[in-house]
Length: 127
Picture 1: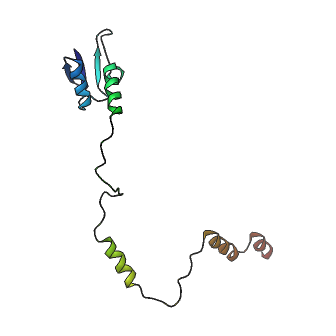
Picture 2: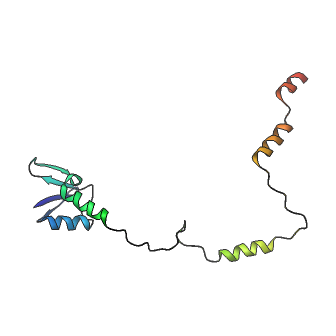
Picture 3: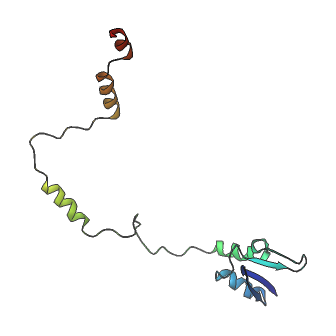
């Protein structure tokens, strides 16, 4: 017989090891549950009990169930009509004969800013 405190104030008595194992596999008994240890007359964590450890080892050895999805997305579902929006955006832009300017890197931005600002020594000499 095993006396288990499933949660604070809720205790359950299990008559056999099989019943205790079934409750562990069923999710009734969680890692935060406690079991009464008769020898020390105290409550201990269920994770210290050998039946719980054996049940968790058996559960870890089981293969994982197949995934319900074949493709994962960030939001869970893809937005319908996304392709249509992208094609409309591409068509609505006017075509120009000039090629678009190439984006410049951060080094070019910083060097342009340095050239635009006079150095500190030049400012002090002019003052």
